[in-house]
Amino acid sequence: MTIDRGRLKNLLAAEQERFDTAHPRSRALFERAKKSLLGGVPMNWMVRWAGTFPIFVREAAGAHFTDVDGHRYLDLCLGDTGAMTGHAPAASVEAIAAQARRGITFMLPTEDAVWVGEELARRFGLPYWQTTLTATDANRFVIRLARHVTKRPKILVFNWCYHGTVDETFATVRGGAVVARDGNLGPPVDPAVTTRVIEFNDVSALEAALSHGDVACVLAEPVMTNIGIVHPEPGFHDALRKATRRAGTLLVIDETHTICSGPGGYTRAHGLEPDILTIGKPLAGGVPAAVYGLSAEVAERIRAATTVEGADTGGIGGTLAGNALSLAAMRATLEKVLTKEAYARTIPLAERFVAGVEAVIAEHRLPWHVTRLGCRAEYWFRASPPKNGAEAAAAIDPDLDRYMHLAALNRGILMTPFHNMALVAPDTTEADIDLHTRVFRESVAAILGS
Ligand SMILES: Cc1ncc(COP(=O)(O)O)c(C=O)c1O
Image (tube, rainbow, N blue to C red; front, top):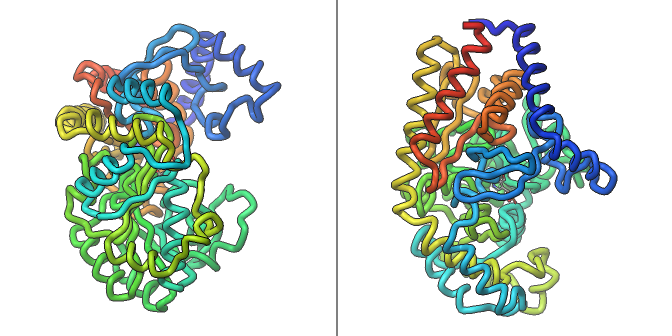
């Protein structure tokens, strides 16, 4: 099946016009914002939405939000996992409001910190925990710690990974060499100095990359989620764990997105044994909070290799990290929102999403596929699931992507930007999922002219 690109271009132009006409208030706010905010947005990613300008949010609850023009949307983006709990989950909001009245940040612990540490240990199986404000920070700090305790200079990541704005990870392989990812702004050093990059699921490349004895840690999502969803092949995690142990390299598992697998992430669901685990985004119901967990052995090595005097200059910081508000929010969210019962609702809904999309793909014999991980699902423009980041990246189709996103947005559905991804919140309903299937079917029919 080939897509008529001229037709797609016309469809996109029509959707663009429809979008512009429907959002006069967002457009006016964007025009005003351009005078005080770089690019008209408070944060640079917000220019990457499919419309000519971002829609401005008025309010949100559960799986829906309303924009300043009064349109109501089904949110399948959910703040790119930051709001996987649904928007404004009641238990988190109550705890946040109560803690805000009692004080927000002290640079001293509160009792909630202890509860959170105990709960994280129970969920993920690692005994010692630290808090940061973002998953990016968690990843940055554990890379430092891994280098410090192993006395090795390099880290290893998988091609097309994303772990936040972490310098060492903005690397890719081109012609066999490690180079900066396109768009990498002002890299402090050539990433080839700091980083080895191999393809996901390639055990022999892994063994070769670790054989030099200079890799402090492997930093990996257990399932890649930032270049579509790329699942590990059977036996890959076993091989990864064995190879890292053999090489004296620490294994860091980043569960920031894969927490969609279940309450203890992919790690607990699949019995992984990382030395270090990082996670951020939805942990505090949308309030900035992230954590990293350490095995007893790594914790002991850190204790032995650090001093109290150096604690404020060691490169691990954040004045607001561990603040009372984040911890109260994390406690309430872990106790009452990101529960086993919530996953029991959201995972079947993601299965329903996949069944709907799969049916449309089959009806039209499209060379596309849809993959799921827990309550996250994503369709991708290639016939079979990719084995690694390079295969997935080769199937990116920016025009098709833009059209699918904009057509969905104009029909009341927000998909995750830079992805064709849907995340399901506890408040999402079967009717919501069926709305997506209907809109997906209509969009495909429009592309094919059928
Ligand atoms: C797997 C993973 N780790 C870490 C991060 C960084 O999260 P944050 O931007 O909240 O620091 C992201 C962000 O998308 C991510 O996908």
